[in-house]
Image (tube, rainbow, N blue to C red; front, side, top):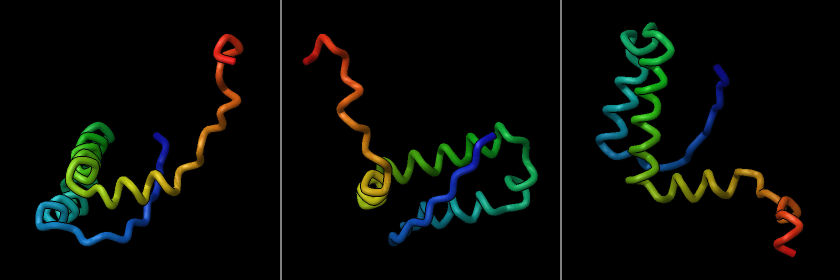
Length: 75
């Protein structure tokens, strides 16, 4: 499984704080990969739909794709 770390500077809401507490619990930390992935995905969905400032920060940090990947028949 590939890991990725994100360092986000945002003000977490109460739901974020609850989810972060659950994600750092021994139950999740020692759970199997599927359970950990599902819980992480739930938190990322929450961030995506409820914290637009997080999405904007991530989008600004991602490398931009070059337009030279277009097919010849688009030119």
